Length: 307
Image (tube, rainbow, N blue to C red; front, side, top):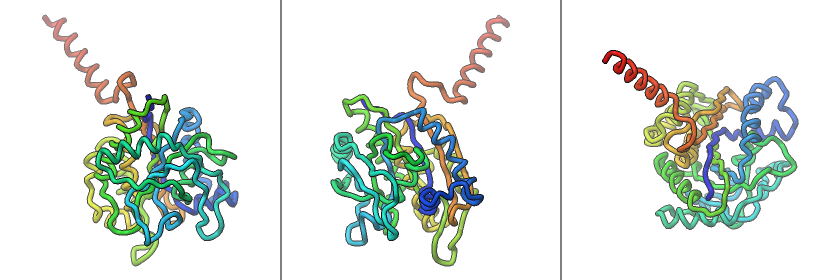
């Protein structure tokens, strides 16, 4: 049976992609950003998933104001890089996993999620930049990727809770897929930033770091955050963070935080990265529970001695 083993969340700043494409990753401005993702690449190489489900938002590449799906699941065999105004990025074609994608679509739709099924779609920096940050710049992406585009551009975007619940539906779908696959879910976008208007350039590190904390420890409470709070605290484009809830909803209640990275700015954007692994029934127990269990054993031993 297939299973989701971990989730990864990352910003998808387009300028990061430009720095990679123009071989500027060692420049002083960019070195601190890319250095922070070295451990992410090491972790990804070690985990070596069979499939990635990439939650991202399209930037008027595959969709426009003419067609705005709230959730669009890529079920095609491949997804070429989009021309975002200066030609397609020099990255590999994203190879999909049509069988698993179709299974997820069937399961989620029958569970009440009206997904848009997309059989032809170009993907932009929203998906390819996180793939670069996780896998580097290979000649081919090392595993199939199922893209799931979320509308966070045109009002109204889905709520954090709806995204979290979609993650739960994806988890259920993957768990019922008969092939033995190890799946990692990407949540992309953010963190705090605003690219236009009177508050252009806004970055709220306090909010971002609190978001990272709660994503691990209080995901359901965090998912209840209203749209207005994202706008107020994280800027207009900070609403992209609702896509991280899809990733978190696809994981177990208890997860282990493997790695975290945060830096500002990168092209007027706060850059965040977090890796969460499912603990699993046979996995290592969360530290708090393990500590409490040890304390209880010590107390019982003390009572026996006193008796």
